[in-house]
Length: 302
Ligand SMILES: NC(=O)c1ccc[n+]([C@@H]2O[C@H](COP(=O)([O-])OP(=O)(O)OC[C@H]3O[C@@H](n4cnc5c(N)ncnc54)[C@H](O)[C@@H]3O)[C@@H](O)[C@H]2O)c1
Image 1 (tube, protein in one colour):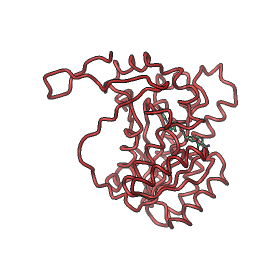
Image 2: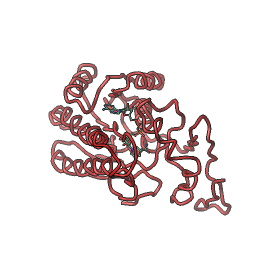
Image 3: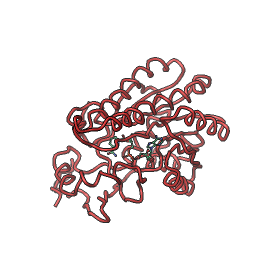
Image 4: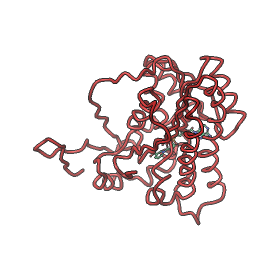
């Protein structure tokens, strides 16, 4: 059983949300509370890369709930379209543009389609990324390193380069890059050295661009997720790390043990990342740039 925890201000210990291992998947109960905060994202055009699966799906749905126009730029057409269909029932507008972020021409074509359709791009969320497999550096074949660098670092560079002229012309734009706690912690990059290196590159790139682009009204920030567990296998695409390997590593025992040591005694879910992204994409964060926000339940603290 998960251990009891204390909630500040409460006299009695409470138990974290129960976890159930069903259909080969951990269910993470969402426990949201509080009123909506108006973020002014209605009618904004937002590109989310890799929006078909897990975290990206959570981000696409969150912007759709805010009434944004969302371009889901995912290489997985089937899963990407499924999320777009869900998003279109939530108030905003969403469209899938099949995109391979590692391919410069594909990225340019996606940005042109977004501009043709909506006339402007307000927000870019570079979420597409991942690793083919976690294993020791010396055991990894070269193609896995190349893939990690290509999607996690080149993908971000390509997408920023493709939207930035437009944002400079408009003197307005928000860029949010999804890196990882592996990008700033050796512990979190265990068995993920090159992936961690690529994510560290995203953090440094973001700081450098924040300096360079701030004068044009463009903010560049980073969100570093900790373990973010999909709530259902339906919420991840075929290519997802979680579908391929994640559940081999993160068994109920491992996850429960982790929960016992993390300051916030629960697992992360896509909405946790989406909430941070919504804030950084909004005018409420207009004085925030070059920052790296760890959304990891306290797994890393800098
Ligand atoms: N889930 C976690 O625990 C976790 C932790 C830290 C960081 N992250 C980062 O968060 C982001 C999302 O993670 P996730 O768990 O949702 O991953 P995921 O594998 O479930 O989803 C990734 C999505 O990106 C798409 N994608 C992959 N390659 C692409 C390409 N070349 N072009 C366009 N789309 C592509 C996939 O089709 C998929 O829809 C990634 O950048 C990942 O590195 C995740």
